[in-house]
Structure formats: structure tokens, C-alpha cells
Length: 326
Ligand SMILES: [Zn+2]
Image: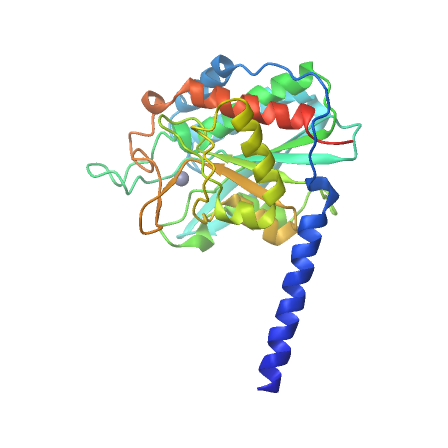
């Protein structure tokens, strides 16, 4: 009994401590800064999706996967410079196969020691088990993977042309979507490797934002559960910018589900408070529903909606250029 009380007490103290440090973290305070904000081009972003989807599904150990990492490497080197892009390659054994995987890290505003992190996974799922007629074929991943990466590719161009008020690191994680359903140990391969093998030890940006499925038709982005736990101020700031910009039909002011994704792995392994902007809905029973094309062959260019990408791009540029105090 005593033991249990002590245990409960120490958990309470730990929670309180976590709560205080999270809430008081100065990196998660935001105010308008009166700085000018560059324009986001969803036309460019759309073309970057096309370029990825045209390679075919970016499934580990395929030609499309190898060509895609070369495409990203060229693109980010063009805009960040050769010295600011690093490809972290590693091998891992999954389901009897040795996978060659690659995380790509591109740094912008390298003169700033004060930094933020933006990320998305770039791999495509090797099977689309939600597809009634073709469950074993790899998926095109136009929204699931390519849309977020395309947004980051457009950010790279913008960051190279418009001086940043803070340093920004873009990370493309590999191997997010490899696991069989519910086999979470074999998801998030890239973010887990990066978190366990940090290229820059002690790396501690103010926060991270994951952009998973940010270009699909009829998108809505409720406030994802873990994000609200890790960095509620950041979530609320982004959603309030969206409301000011009249994008509150997309960034709905509702609590979403708790979704296992790269942001949890990053938070757990590094302590970086990271949120996830992800298209999903909660049904009446509180279950998470992803869009109907999710993990099917329908996740192709037909379901991409440029207006959704424009909204997410506008909101994030406002955050990055105009809401983060120096
Ligand atoms: Zn997926």
C-alpha cells in the first residue's frame, strides 16, 4: 500500500514536472512579429508531387525508391547548398529482408543556432491492404508521403529566396509506412534510426512539425491527440492562424485522435516537442478514420487538392516567418 502511494506520488510529481516544463518552454510562445511573409506556391508543390508519383511507389529496395532519394538530394542541394544536406543511410532487417534506407536532412538559415524542425516520411507503403481489389500492390502514395514532402520541397525554394528569422531543418524520414497493420515495431524505421543515431548530438530545436497527408481532397485536420499533449501552444497557434486566414474549414477546432506516427518517435527519443498535421476524422465512437483513399490504389494524383496544399503552406509560412519571437 505504502509502496503504491509512493509510486503514485512520484508519477504525479513526474507528470507535474513534465507539464510545467512543457507549458513554460519559451520556445513554444508565439506573438505576431510584424515581419513580411513570402508567398507559397501550391502549383510548384503540386508539380513536386507529380515528380515523385511518376517514379512509381517509393518502396524500399526498389528502383523508384533509389531514384526518389536522388531526386530529393538534387533538389535540396540546389536550394540549401551542398554543405547543408546530409543523407543518413542505414540498413535494417524487416520481415526477412535487408532494407537499404535513407533519411535526408537539409538545413536552412544555418547562421541561426535557434532552430525548428519540419518533417515528413518519403517512403510509400509496400502494400495497400485497404484496397478491396488489390491489397498486395504497393500504393502510389500521392497524399501519404508525397504531399508533405512536396510541401517541404517548396519550402526549400522559399527559404533559399527569403531570409529566415530562425533556422529550419527539414528531415525526410524513410521507412515510416513499412509495417504490417498493428506491427508498430516495423513502422517509423527512419525516425527511430535518426532519434537513436543523431547526426548532431544534442540537437534541440524549439519544436517539430510533421506534415502527413496534407494534400488530399476533403481534408480536415483536427487537433491530433499526441500533438496536444506534446505542444498545445504550437497546435493552438497554428489553428488560430488558420482561423484568421479563413481556413478553419480545414483546421477544425476539434480534438482529433491519438495517431501513432513519426512525431511520437521523435518526441520519445529526443524530447523535441513535435506535432502532426494529419488528415483524419473521429467517428461517433471515437475511432480514427483516415480518408477513403488511404492505403489504397486511389491514393493517386486524382485525389490531390491544390487548395488544401495552399492553405497548409500559407499557415505554416505565417508561423515560421511572423509568429516566432526572436
Ligand atoms: Zn500510410
